[in-house]
Image 1 (cartoon, one colour):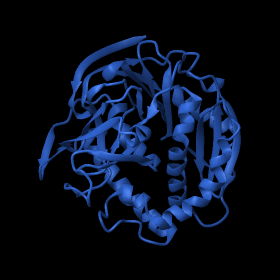
Image 2 (spheres, helix red, strand yellow; image 1 turned 135 degrees about the vertical axis):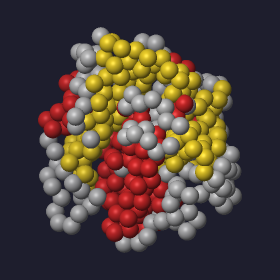
Image 3 (cartoon, one colour; image 1 turned 90 degrees about the vertical axis):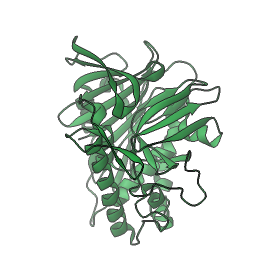
Image 4 (cartoon, one colour; image 1 turned 135 degrees about the horizontal axis):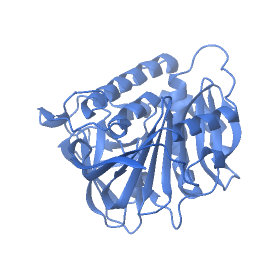
Length: 369
């Protein structure tokens, strides 16, 4: 039962209106319970372990297409606004488009990561969406790219710590923080923990930390000459691709012959890291290559000398998901009827997105804190 409700303009996250409600943890709906999932695996390569999640789909009807698909087909526009922490997206096609928290878009004045799930209906018009910079310093066109738009979204955040930082303002019930201006850019002021400014600083530090770890474990500098601070360009490094290729070859086929797989859980060095579950098996399969790539990059970054620890048990995987589902709940209403439900527990977080009133879930993202 809701004990408080606030409807406010939350400028840093560029939502036209955000409804915030804190509730005591009620019994979860039938479609939001780790007890209902089945698991297959573990599938392991070196220090990366994957479990597939099987269960009842939560999304009726035709699933949305992914942001990557839509950009490749010219069906969506991702538009620069001049603010580091805000972009605009517009679906100009006839299919709904799913944007996932953690999707990286390449181009514009700086590469960005989109920090919330969003489901854009056909011909949506321009919709504001929260973002964080994953390329510190550049604020001009790069090579032949268009500085006003973003051309690709082929990668995702490859770091648990950066995922937590990017979603921190959404998980917190903070008041808006003021914007400051630097060199024509509007950047959220670095304020309290959980603020947009604090989170942006953590994302930048996460990029630098990831680049240093990859340099150590790949054996070459992954920072690109065109923009040394770009996470996107680092993930395109050829030596890194060669290193992660063995992981991808070993694990990509795990989804073959499993038409009821709706998501996955992964562990690195024997420790559970994150999970993504989708409302439709078709949507999971479309996202799988991108999810696996991000997981393999993180595994390479965290690789240690010596034998890898044993894979976690299925019971440990289920306990992780259940812990996230038991956290304190908050609901927020986004554009076009999208509902974001967050659950924040001591050791895990859950972010769930739903489309339409009473609609089934589209995506659930679980992260170990």
